[in-house]
Length: 209
Image (tube, rainbow, N blue to C red; front, side, top):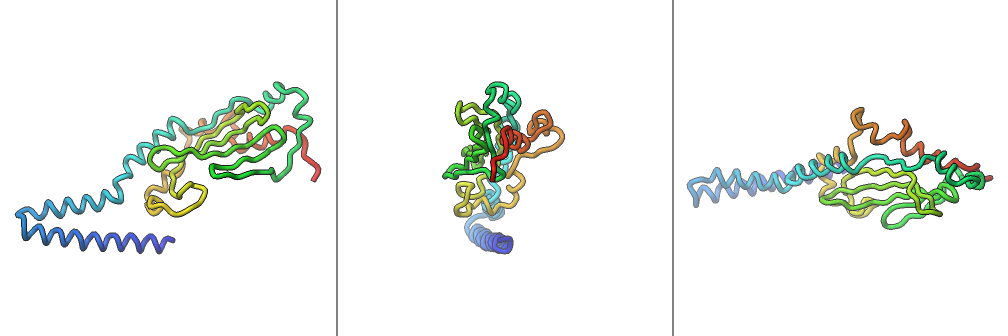
């Protein structure tokens, strides 16, 4: 794939060089300012490829700052207290049953708790990956994690390669940056979303295999 992209990039540069040279030659014959035409054609060829970089960069950082992160509405111990006697009746397995559809997946962690993964389209080429732990009986959202990524493939779950996928300089915006300044957005009481999944899954007993 890397060789293919490199070949396409070189071909694009070569074709544009020929076109720009042709524009310069024509402009030199019919105008007294061919340099302006050459500069204008060069800018157009650059904007065709890089013109969306600034809005994608700005939108990505905005969504990461305002919509991404971890939200915990109820911890496992709180859920157990709110539903006395239920946890003791629940069972779980190492490999949870799951179902897939066109918009994500659902994992059955135990008889009451679902891990739901959904993808939401955002403006430009952004996705929000929304993951929730849900009480399937009450419909209550217990934990929610929201990630922002770029829609570099059609439908993000597969499908044909989109043009933006060839723009390697967009890859750094395929996830929200996590560092010491914003790590608190992704942890709750020093626990990550993955750790909370395990805790909610194992609030009952392990089923006999």
